[in-house]
Length: 554
Image (cartoon, rainbow, N blue to C red; front, side, top):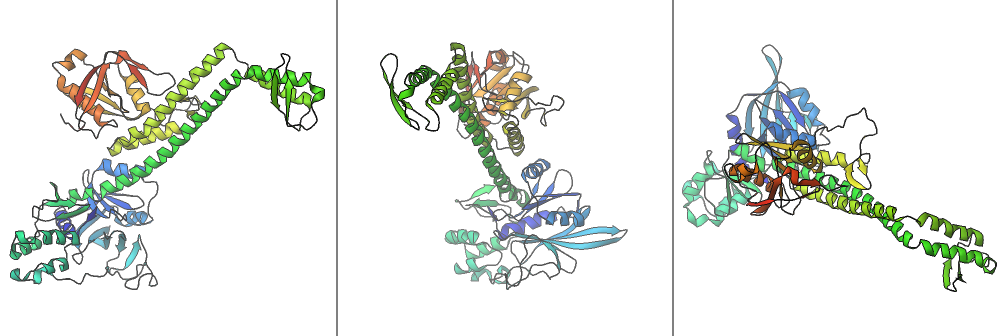
């Protein structure tokens, strides 16, 4: 989603009301920087190729960005050294374009300060962030440009800053109301082409003077979006969606949300690769067990072939690759031979296979049991990516992704099951002692929601008492939800709103969260049993069922 020129006009006006404001801290990633302002507010600046711009974000949103950003741009250290404990004095839009200039002052002694300018060029896909000194010379920039690369302007430290080429259009203030015509709309400065085309599509609905008045208005309060384009304009275009927010908060849709989704997609790809390796490891173990069972069925044949070779040892020519021999019962056997081994050594090879393949009934049962456990573990692993992708809250997603990565780490995985191996070092504690889960309150009642397989196991088998209520979306991967310290009878009658709320959590934390309604099963925790060989797969009895909307709020 892109920020339009006219939207940035409103965003700048919106931000001016909060000035001056102090910068207390700075964080950053590879395509973003965040300046900590007062309270819980952060000014997020993005030069990402697909989501450049700025907006106000809160602490949890910046923490989520920081946690999932593995690298950071070199400009972040330059920002920290110059602007930590400094003050934003002014903000303005340059050339009616997608260019924002922040005037920032850093105190160096009593009564004395050094002025800087921070320029955000929200001109995706070539967005940039530049630090200028008080004479507008470039000190640092994310993207540099030499004269060979750009004949219009040079972006290098020490060079005087020049803005990108100015759009050679018509200044709206210079037009007389009656002189604005249909063709002029596309050539107006400060109006993005998508908005201009919207106006043209509805040109006959208002007289030219009314359109010009709305174009010139600096107080337009209607924030609208269409086809990933965010703008502000006081007219009800039926093909647009209205956002009931101020520009600086609505900008999240174009700046923060795409950044979170970008890193989220990257994390999901990493987890998918780890899950694929974990599944392959278990499938190899499964193949080995299946081979062992098949060899067991062939054990008697191996013995017969070994005996046939010994009984006909003088009839086998040296370096033979196969032989057709008769066993003691007169049956013909086609026997593969290793040409590098003598006849007696080939016989010994078949006897070794016979001894290795011999397993008793108890061992066969154990192999069959292990195969069932591996199949369940593979099923559970395949569900994890779906479950993780269903989490939209950045904090919940990050907690679950980190926990899943730790669970899938080579030193913690077992080839035969979905459970985590205990650390060989008894003195060391796990880096994540409490598996990820969320805690909600409804009418004084605590509700727990698991955020991963280990989180599900934790809330169900570590936190829940036998009479606590367990909920899960019906027959789809999802979170285990626990309602603490309230009886089933109360939930089904006098406290039904709590049951509905918990059911909506189970539905919204499942792979069916996009459905209009979801069936959710619930029962007492004492009726829930863990499936052996898995982390959090369960069976349950005595369930009740409720149909609920995942998006319903109570």
